[in-house]
Length: 150
Ligand SMILES: *[C@@H]1O[C@H](CO)[C@@H](O)[C@H](O)[C@H]1NC(C)=O
Ligand SMILES: *[C@@H]1O[C@H](CO)[C@@H](O)[C@H](O)[C@H]1NC(C)=O
Image (tube, rainbow, N blue to C red; front, side, top):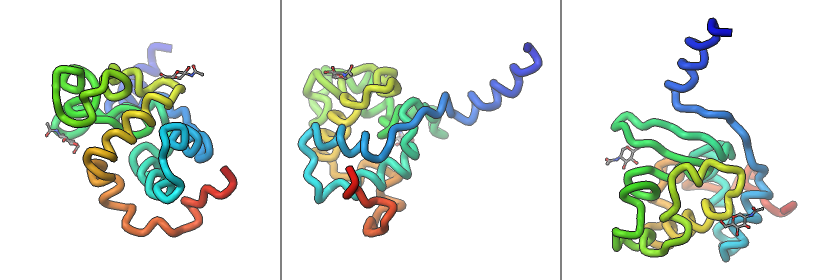
């Protein structure tokens, strides 16, 4: 199967890993477990849609060489890994749980720590910390972000 290697390498270079997804309601549940009010859920669902499209194991490489991890696409310069550890006093990095975890801990199927970190970032910086939210989520009234069945 060596002949597949160039193809696999090509996938690796565009930055995708495996593509396993969470459902909308699983994301809603994880966020509610972190105390997110229903009034924020449409924004969160839009953010997740445009950051990862619900893929929780995705790692994307940005043009500047930094990487974004998981369903909320945490950046390894700011939100996880070396500079995201406990040494920094920047708001969402202070706590040892959640954002202080390794970047790879945000690509497993347990999105509870992801949601914890995401909520902390939002509380410190608002949804504007996410480019996907800034670019696409000024109007979140569509049925795509309906969570009434969750
Ligand atoms: C690198 O690019 C990403 C995506 O545009 C951005 O979020 C991040 O802040 C940038 N990192 C640095 C150190 O400029
Ligand atoms: C998911 O992670 C959280 C915190 O990291 C932990 O408390 C919980 O037990 C984990 N859930 C499962 C099903 O492993």
